[in-house]
Image (cartoon, rainbow over the protein chains, first blue to last red):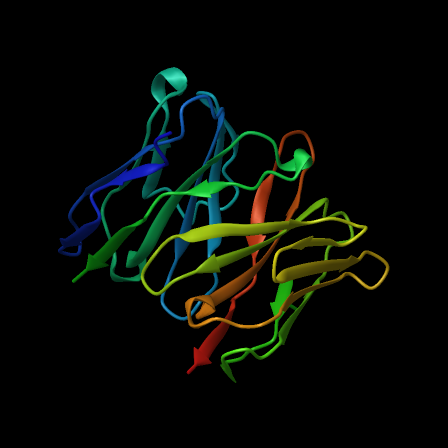
Length: 115
Length: 112
């Protein structure tokens, strides 16, 4: 079974540019999450989709970040315009059911560097 | 106060040692509990869920104390391959499955 895949694995962009990250969850997982780890900090929640609906976007830092999941399959996270503090590793995860003790499965992450 | 707090580490232990990691969480509404491991520059991977009755998976034993809001992970007979950062993770949900709250992680280094 294919895992969660993310693209690109690395991205270096200049301040003010736009970057779009993509995530393909595990097939059949309705729940899709975006997380971010900035240097020296813990992994932090950004947003949660259930199918194509945004269930919780309380972790999104500001309106420069836009996440979509059209059709309830893959998701994109766009940062526009990027700022220096947006640098970090962006992880996508998908899950079936936490209550059953099944955690979320993570993609390998996109390492974003804004210069 | 952080929502999930872990031993700061790093833990440097010889092969074969037993090592224990502790974690506390602040939100009593937390519903699910997990230990993840993360290798350097890799994604977090689920190591094991943590159940109220405690659970074991080979050399790994996890314990949960809801009254004290405390989670532990015990690794017996440490292997070189156990070297990684161990993340304590909790989940609480309202109308949906909510999200995962991560600790900062504890780094383990197992030496020959």
